[in-house]
Length: 118
Length: 291
Image: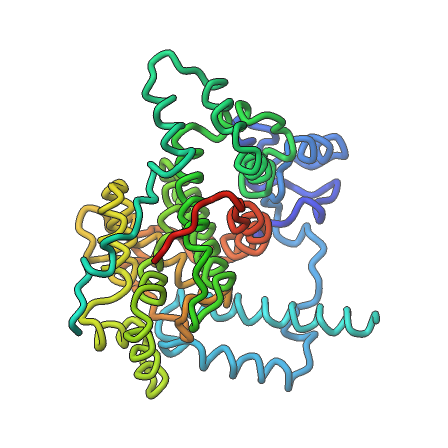
């Protein structure tokens, strides 16, 4: 189930895991369909992210498809060289590699947007 | 060779829970008549410390969303032991501020260490382990031994880096080849001397070989995984240029599924700036270590 930032939470999304505050008090139970009032409550308690039903969030196109292929290849090569062990040595490493590659791709694209804005 | 672990750590002042204001806090805690507001008063005597505690308390790190206004509130919500741990950790960072190692910037060193601390704390929370703050401190101090090598043994540090750069090897292997031991063992000796709890000492000592940590395998494994993630995210640098190997048994010992990795990384990205601001900002009146 995806965890998404509060800023992306919208009315009508379905909560898939109980949302609790720091004192473990239940704020919104799993299964609840979010209303504007719920979103106010989440803001008031400083909840920064939560789990909602897959597909309910407005998913952006995959970052690995948005970044130019040659840049992606360059990032992939740079990262592969940094890992001491082969990337596919185990499932955790493969998942970590995928996540940090996406993170680097997002940073690269963000840099491009900022540069274009100047 | 020629220099022992003891020689590295001898003469490094005690920075553990007994430094400066922390010692005063402990004396308040040891007084059975003391209250939260007494403790708050001690911290408030040091405005920078108080500001730092409130800044951290109100940051995404704790998630109280700007609701903390006084030091006493912070202590009651964060918890006395956690506040003590954070203050002790912050005094270690301050004490090492006066040094300028040649091989890594202090900013980069602490960024890596703080990222590891945040990651370790998130993993501990995800695993519902008690005293998650302890994992933050263990992560924060995991490479402290390396800093001691840089600061106290520049000649050996130069040898270590010359060897390290000459072939594909991990920095800790170069440390062992030159010194006969590595930074994790120096950190262990240092923290043991400062009478840190055994779980913290062992987590630091075994962060590269968590399954050798006996009773403290879980603590060591959490720090090991967090260190790996901080390296993979290229968050700062403690001298090592590679993302070190991940121990699969350690990952299994942590006992979480791979979906947790994304949220841990997001938390590190989200919290690193505030945590850096809260910790790596020395008070000018803090005595610097003469290493």
